[in-house]
Length: 384
Image 1 (cartoon, rainbow, N blue to C red):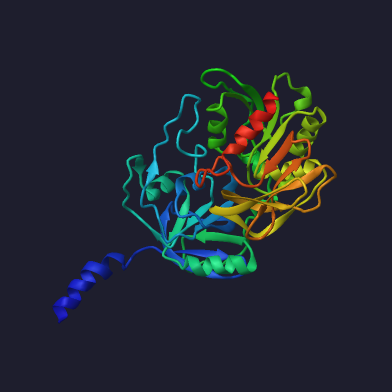
Image 2: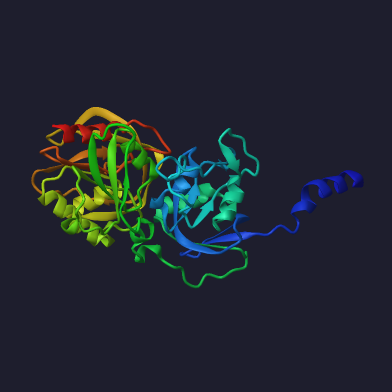
C-alpha cells in the first residue's frame, strides 16, 4: 500500500509541489489564485470576458482589446497553437489581426501546453512569453464571469505572488488608447488588379482583416492616423472609413472632428465598431458604457426597416466592444440594427444611405461571416 502511495506522489504530486502560483486581484478585493503561464510579469488592466469557443490568436491580436485582461469562458484554450507571423504582399500579418498581442493578460480555466494544427508554429505559452504577456490558468472562470456579469467589468491586476496585496491599479480608460494602436503616418495599399475605389481609412486600431476585406475587393486603401487632418490633405479618395479600436470613444475628439469634415463634404462614410460610436458622436448623438460589453462570436442582430421596425432578417455577428450608442439620434438618422439579446443599438444609418456604421464586425476573425456583405453594400454605393 505504501508503495502505491509513493508512486502516486512521485508521479502526480511531487512534480507540482514547488510550482509557482499567480493571482488575479480585482478592484473590489476579490482574489483568484491559479497557475501562471506566459510571461512571469505583473500586469494591470480592465478585466473582461469573451464567449467565443475558438479564435484566440485573432482575439489576442485585436487592437480593440488594448488595455484589457481577457478572460476566455470556453474551458480549454491553446490546443491548436498559434500560426506563424508571415506577412502578406502588403507587409502586414497574413493570419493575425495585428503584429503583436494587444491584451494586458489572459485568464483561462485550462491552457494546453501541446497543440496540433497545420498552420501552428508555436504554443500559446511560448507566444505569450515572447510578447511578455502574463496568463493564469486553473481558476474558476465561470465564477469570474458571473461576477463580471453581475457587477460589470472592473479593474484588475495579475501578480506573480499569491500573497500580494492590492494597492492601486492603473486604469487604461484614462488614456487615449486609440493613439497607442493607430499608425503614426499615412500608409497606402494598392490592390492586386483593377482599382474600383479609393477609401481613406481612419486607423483607430484597425484589424488586419478589414484591410484584407477592402483589398480583395479592389479597393485602394489610404490608412490614416487617428488624428489625420482631412482639411489639409492632398490625398485623393472616394469615401471615408472609420475602424474599430479600444477605449472610450469620447477620447477620440480629433477623429470625431474629421468625420464631421467628411460628412460636410458629402463623402460616403462607413464605420465599424468604434467607428459606429464615433460617427454617432460626430452627428450629435451620445454613447455610454455597457455593464460588461459584448465580446464573442455569437451575437444576434436584427435589421430594422426605414420606419424603425424589426424586419425578419437576423444575422449572427462577431463583436468586441464595451460602449454603445444611445437611442436618441438626430433627424434623418435611424437605428439600423439592434442586438436581439439586449435591444442595444448595433448600427446607425442616414436616410440617404450614404453614411452608415455597425457596432459588430463584418470582417469577423474570429466569428461568422453573416455580415461580410456590408463591405459590398458600401462599395455599391460608391459606384452609383
